[in-house]
Length: 121
Image (cartoon, rainbow, N blue to C red; front, side):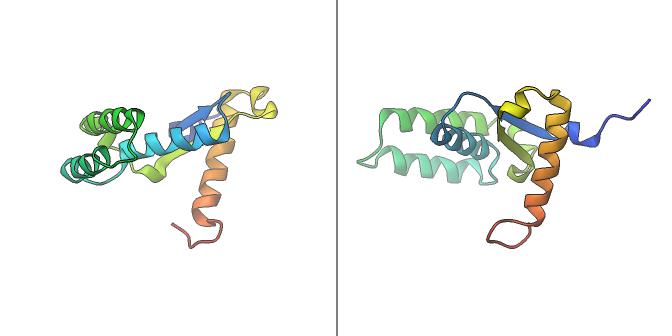
């Protein structure tokens, strides 16, 4: 009997049916939940953005939701770099989910060690 791969303990977000801009927006919202800034600094940021002339109702609501979520202890327990995002492909839709997670984890680790245009994390 084989052991459970350690990669299956990774925090993974798999997105299906979203456009690329929607995926970027979702990634940014989720990452902001886990960002390291303290809640007071975030509250000052939200205040500045809410009062900006270009702020939309959607922007204001989104910032408030993120601010509320950032106060939940569980969102403070993981570093942003430990979140893995991917969108489905025709191949991944036919692959067992455990295999997809293991494969994504390998890709994530490679990119952490070999970032495009940057230095390793």
